[in-house]
Image 1 (cartoon, rainbow over the protein chains, first blue to last red):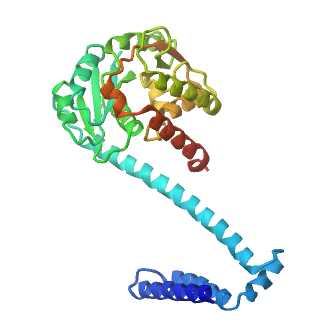
Image 2: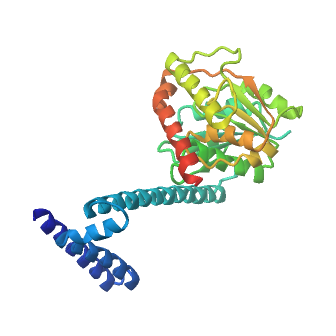
Image 3: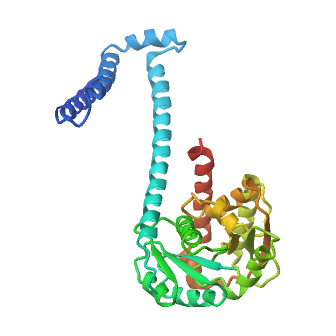
Length: 110
Length: 226
């Protein structure tokens, strides 16, 4: 019961933050719908835990909670990988920029 | 031949001038890349006669070498590029012997080695780390060298153009070895003398260096190239 309250409260909090950002024109309508759709699913599964069991059975997993855990691990691992690659690309871009400035501003008067 | 020594420097105000003067006696020009030092490295190098390029943000030794290489090739028309350290551990008098195989056309890349006969006062811990690095390099690059992370190198113009360093940190040494194999460049090792001092050893503890290098290489091989 406590877990359900915490999860639903957090999901509602996250959803309202996204709405705020949408109103401030910081995120698109597309992102608002995707993100809040996800939180709606989280709220649904938190309030009716057996609903996830149905989907879990479809893909051959015993419990809905297990399915949620497996999916989260895969999604998070992929997200970390993407962030890592992006961060590496950013580092290389910074180096290119720093190099360009160094080559442009070199003092050749000796 | 137009030989340009390139020296990446980070907080080397106290040593860089002597290093520039030492190298200058054996090359046509010296290029120092000040990798965003907090001290007066740039001015010290400039007053000793070097051309100084400055990184506005610290990017690491590999990045500084690549910046200097591009300058030496494109603006100075270098025919040979010599990688030289800023901390005074390398000896300018080794440069002619390093460059000789390129001048005679015997090699595209000459790699300095601390284990080919010349005396060195390398500490035991560093020897062990170096031996591990040797095995690691054979496994990763398939290149067998007596010294994998010496840092003293001479590159022909062709080799300098082909060995583009994209690993900004210390792992650039492994990347250079990798690229030597990939680009099928001819390489030889030559003995060099490296003089260690307590001051320079404290600046880069061997164990930490080794860890950072392995991390960078694995990151490059397993993730960035996917």
